[in-house]
Image (tube, rainbow, N blue to C red; front, side, top):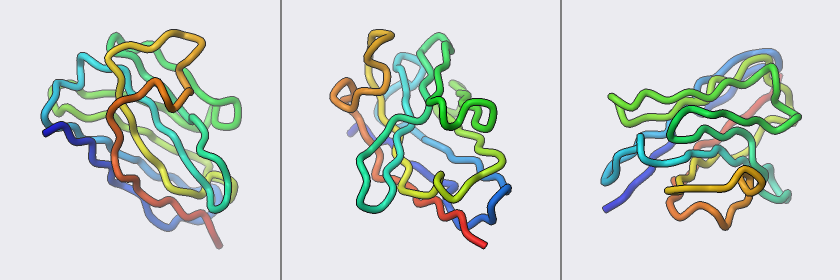
Length: 125
């Protein structure tokens, strides 16, 4: 059974940091492109950050310079380091995987066959 499991969410003050993890089982993560999506309450899901199997990365404009995506293939895990968090960063964060995705479709949900169940990030004073 293929599973992606997110962890690391929680409550943080504005300006704080969190590191999210996406741990895979049932597949070798090194063979997949991975993306982080997020969804705020009553809003559409949006792409946040992408990392290819060969470690090409991409970010939404709203998080550039604050978030960093990385992968540790030995641990079969992808990470999202989130710094200088803002209230608008709050929401449910999901990781998703694809065997291949073209450059102009990196943040399209329909490109990803495997999804985790999400981890919640709350940014509040």
